[in-house]
Length: 115
Image 1: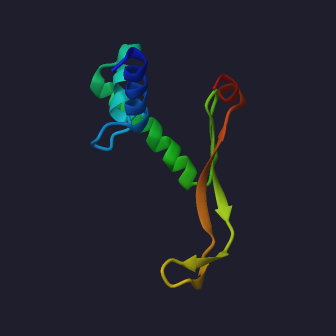
Image 2 (image 1 turned 180 degrees about the vertical axis):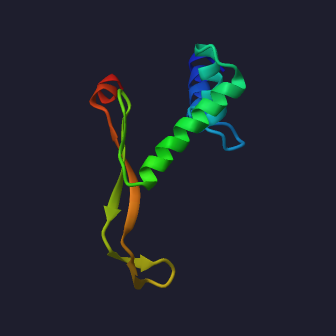
Image 3 (image 1 turned 90 degrees about the vertical axis):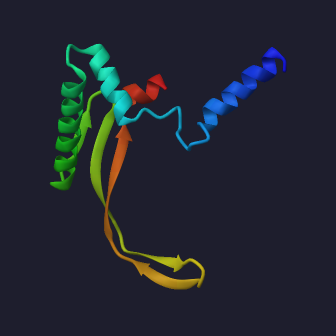
């Protein structure tokens, strides 16, 4: 295998993640805890507690119908969805999908400009 092909194969593996279904380009909670631990004076347990607390506050605010703005990242907000008509898979039967709520995210312009 040439250097060029090896590099291309490595990039394909990185893009697709590993065979266990883990996406190597995704930063999970464990990785966040490790990053916070490395960049602060907090130990691993304190970092995990801080992340849990922050995520809990965000979820609680969204449940209360409030939007959550994180400077440099974006804004999470609850948005209402209208009732709509859909098609039931397999039967092609028309069904009504009830109105509901969903969480939306608007990327901050500073982040958008840096991507």
